[in-house]
Length: 74
Image 1 (cartoon, one colour):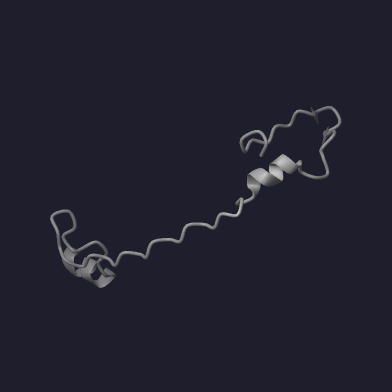
Image 2 (cartoon, rainbow, N blue to C red; image 1 turned 90 degrees about the vertical axis):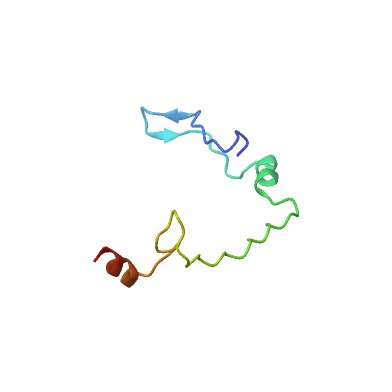
């Protein structure tokens, strides 16, 4: 996280197949970057109901029922 969300393997040893010197605990700056800082997430807007009336772009409305689609194709 201290590298803008990137995880870099600086100490990767391909000879012995291990990574040396991985810190056991994240640095404090990483914890601060991952915290919300006292901010609450913004509530989501309510979902808009689908438009069931035909338009020029959607001949059967925005979300027609499968039976309507089959009847339209038939």
